[in-house]
Image (cartoon, rainbow, N blue to C red; front, side):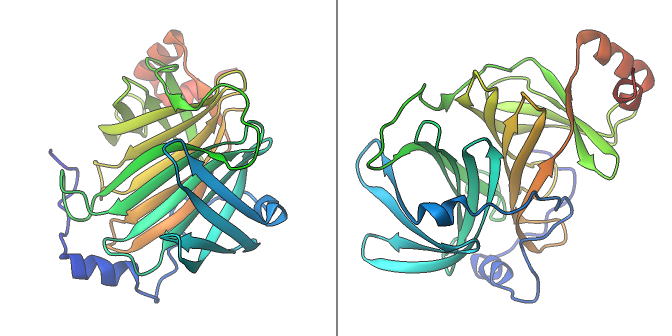
Length: 285
């Protein structure tokens, strides 16, 4: 696959050393505009995320940035984590797994409205592409011991074919063209002369269609192969998510970002965008 930039490749040992380099804080990054941290999980205390195939993940939330989880069912491990409110009663949190090789990370969407959970297991190193590209696998679970309600979380094509504009922060906007269930078109600096247009692998999960809440996952094949994971609230056109991987500066990152303004683009909007640029659409009365 043609890449926008030539990637520096590393051995597995070099990747391990980059991820564990203590000189840099991986939880800040170029789009680091997070919301306030949530303490909801601390109030919950202990939770087990049970898989539909049996077994589960046991977690204890000690404080807003310290959790413990049961590794392989017999060893409690302590990790740094961050948690945010993605929507009313819906919590997004993530943590890295220290010392793992290849490096691993877990992110979660915990829906306390239905007691359903989406678990995302990601790692750096993808044999299908290059050693530095991320790979991830999403699965569906529930909070053990609680009644499960509502429609199940599932992969979806609900908004395939639509186009949304999102503000990155600092006045910069991009457009997402949700072209099919496996890819989206990412256009930055959108308009007559966008400086980047690329189709990238993507997945879409329905959290709650009535509340217009969805999860979006992708790999930035245009750049260094990092993973994006984003909970999108289309009722307010806001989102919150994270990036995970080795960035263009060859540094490890695992940090939260948020989009505070979004807009669905109509056919007329897209015609205007092609003629006069995206900002003519954004600033349209």
